[in-house]
Image (cartoon, rainbow, N blue to C red; front, top):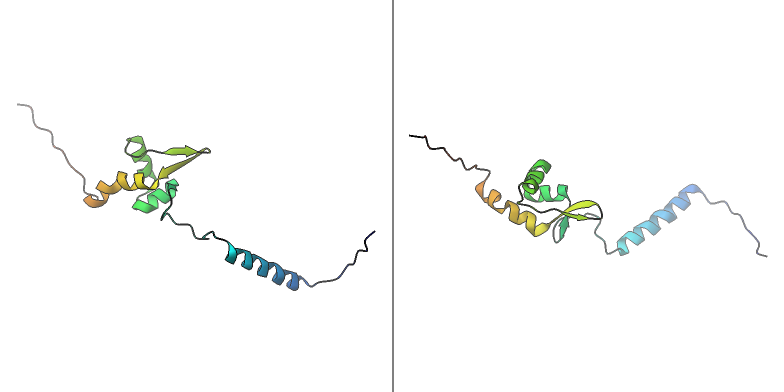
Amino acid sequence: MQDIVLISIPESTIRNIVEQAVRKALSESPCDPTPSTEGKQLLTRKEAAKLVGVCLATIDNKVKSGVLKKYRTGGVVRFLHQEVLNAFSQSLFDNGKRVVTTRSKKP
């Protein structure tokens, strides 16, 4: 049978030990704690909208009009980075100008 030894350690000491362990683990982690869309293949709606500088409704409108395809992975919607850029490339160069067509009057 093993002897159990109880010792009293101040809370601040335990807190320091845990903080140091977490900092060490984070510094050794290959993950970047600040996610960006650069180099990322699949984007959320919010990331896609931010990438091209539009609101979420504009992303939805592009999907409804068939210009942008959405992908479902595990029940969530994602967009391909390059497809988002392609869908908005013409809009980005037009600077938001709308093409207005006029109806010709019947004789």
